[in-house]
Amino acid sequence: MRKNAKGKDRDRFSTAARLKALGEQTAARVYRSQSKRQARRSRLTGRAALLALVLCSMIVALAYPMRQYVSQRADISDQQRRAVDAQKAVEQLRDEKARLQDDAYIEKLAREHLHMQFPGETGFTVVDPGTANKHREDKVETGRAWHSNLWDGVDNADRPAN
Image (tube, rainbow, N blue to C red; front, side):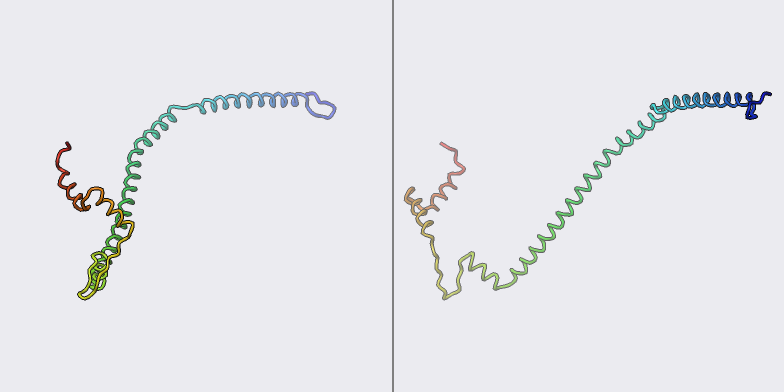
């Protein structure tokens, strides 16, 4: 064995250098091989395609029932809203029924809507001048009262037109 000036073996140094270079070449080959495998793995494999197909078919299979579920939930909330509205209407009708049990309220309604009076009271009817003139004009145009025209219309309603 030869020794250099520093006392190290040249053959050993050159072998170590060769081993290092050989290791780097092997590492490069392994790296290239791994990158090729990774490139092949990144493509769609049969298992991945099958998994994607199963997932898509599950989504399609669940779409209709989910739509039905959402639709039924909307119908339920609509019916609940209607039930609340009906309950409010029932309460209003009960209040009206209770008011109609009161004689003073009935008397008030009869005076306002039916123009009724007690014996001995005098009732007055005030006619709006604009409305009275219109009724007179209708009477002048036809020569008859409005109610006569109304009854003629009812009588002639089922007769065929001339």
